[in-house]
Length: 597
Figure (tube, rainbow, N blue to C red):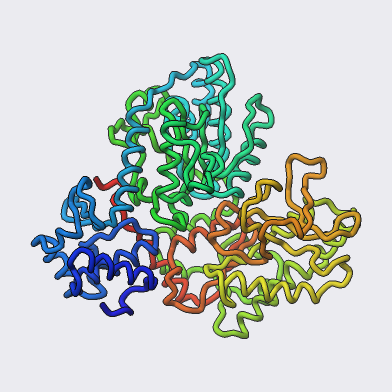
């Protein structure tokens, strides 16, 4: 096999050779081709490959065709199984005209997930709802009342929707009405757990729901990561909670589900009993998990329309709905109405999500001098960068605009001497972010942070310390300090002129926690962060820096959609319009059999 066909590791290449040698297939170029393609697909998040998809044959039409012919004639029966009870390195699943080739391990993961999900939906008993609570729910508008009703009458519910559609608001109301309904039927308060794949997302969910429930009697424990909820054991790699020892909870709400890979999702489903209500929330159009699978997108593919039973339609008086029975009937609600400001951003995000690359020509170009003027409307703009000098000019502009202005300097020095609040400092430091598709290099977050930090250290001498005012982001979980991967803070000096990192906190009188830099877990400066790291965050202004290489595999509509929907008011895309068009035309393709069998 030509080594340049697929970008796979040396270990993967050795494994391919071992598989072929052990199973008597040494020298089979077509099998080697298929294995190389499978390893490449796995590295990009797929669980399998579709042998009838055009991508399988585009590298080598002859070898791909020969592989299918040899498989059909039984030549590869020593290495490829068609029966899950026949343990071989590879297994083939067939549906319609498609053939899906898996490594047995990933096939097993997919089958486990499908089995657990089916059990969760088919085995759970429905819950009765108090008539008074039902009357209150009916007062809500659009899909929210459907979500509230189903959350109280079903044991499993997916709530999906784009940014600003009220997913967190809906989660808070679910917690409130579930608690009230549970108390009426059980005469005790329920145990409610909040969780998410990252500590930052779990904390944000917990804080926002707490705010929504401030006038309610409902109390909820602080949110935690899924690993912490399941009680991950480092020494064995297993979880304390599983099918034999389920999580002691009456309601579990999971946020940012699009970020969860198939194995973690399966472990969560395995640990939730049929007596526990599980609500999973996420935007199916956001970036999928870093690891294997795109579970939410697989479950709710393009064109998916939620369906409801006649009882749901009658109970909520939904004249526009027609009763439909399917596997997901009464188990999925899509929130569509926008409540957050930034309507123009939402419209353009929808065009990006639809792959309308021509919309790039309609985005208004804006120069750095025009940016300096006031009165720019909330919208998506394009800052053309044609060469290195243009790019340096943009970075210098950004630094002056957000970190060298009098307002920021006054807030930073004001916090140092006790004249400004932490809220003022944190809000100022979080007003904008540069989001990058890349982590490394000068067009990545690392390079940008290095450039801007160097400028910042040499600037304003009025600060007590040259690092005061520098935004930072935690990059690993630290449960002892209650700091989590992705959490944002600001470096400053305390009343004793000690340099520390300050983080928001709802549990202290000052609304912040100050931790010495020596005791912080790993962290990085965060003038700029990757789009992946930005998930779950919002900023007033967002600058999206495109790579300067149009062949970069990260150029997809999903990453652009996720980036621009982080903005509350304005988005500025920085780079070459042709590269932006290439990104919007591209789409993350992850193969799996979820929902197809």
